[in-house]
Length: 360
Image (cartoon, rainbow, N blue to C red; front, side):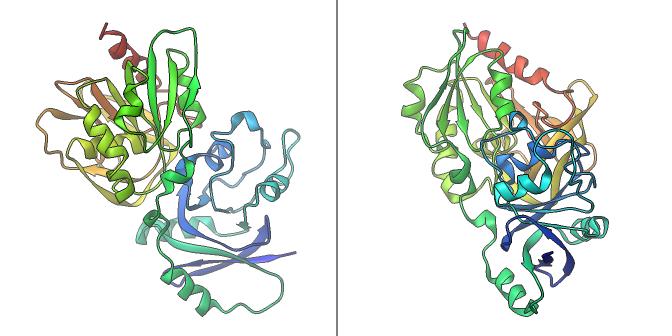
């Protein structure tokens, strides 16, 4: 049986057992607190560039089904587990799934201690290294980690965005252009209940978007740094030109991109929000909602007096949603489609579409 070591950039190393492809992997280690929904998490494009630590132990206990995937492929770089469940009566079993997907996994790890370390010191670069009996040079592995650029320095959105325009026709006459920064399938499915969709690459120009004569614009979720220079010179530049012309709705990374276009700055959270039990408060209704979240950045201090913060995070008061007083613009940091998670805020899809229909 292969063994494995998880090495963090602060010099911490943790021994464990190994399943997967027999290769080493580098990425940013983050944790997710969801008790279900591992299929959706592994295939969520927002996890591109990351090694995912699941805090819940029974991963694999209900198998894997492609119909639950949030994209066409597995997006995480590696996996860290406490007690994986290798036997499920339905679906593809965990070990087979990881081998087919070529995803390395270290398990039999004290995930509680590891999460506490990440919460104290923040997310960090890490490597999962597999081995049999040979001695590993941990000093060289640590140097490699520390010298490697952070995954967020690359344009991760370019890796997960569609390469060509994709049409999602329906019986509805309204047409929404969705700027694909790494969209989840569940977001597409929710919008298909109300409208036809035109899915365009993240770097599409305003000329490309306007030729479809859209009735509204959606900016999707996605991975990485929202202020990456490739996004600033493409997606954010285009969104700035779209403001005031169409109703716009941003989700997760799309929320951050819309915020930047409106004059906000962003900052990297210490360990992010990833899970399906995050409480947010709507400041207009004073109601509390439980939401699904997956992000490592947040907006800070608004500058435009016409932009109002509508949602905040109950745990740390970070901005969870904004809207514009003059234009039909709104965005949320959380995932109203859930997948996995509660459907408390799924009404936001309908609310946006009502703003679209109100224009005519």
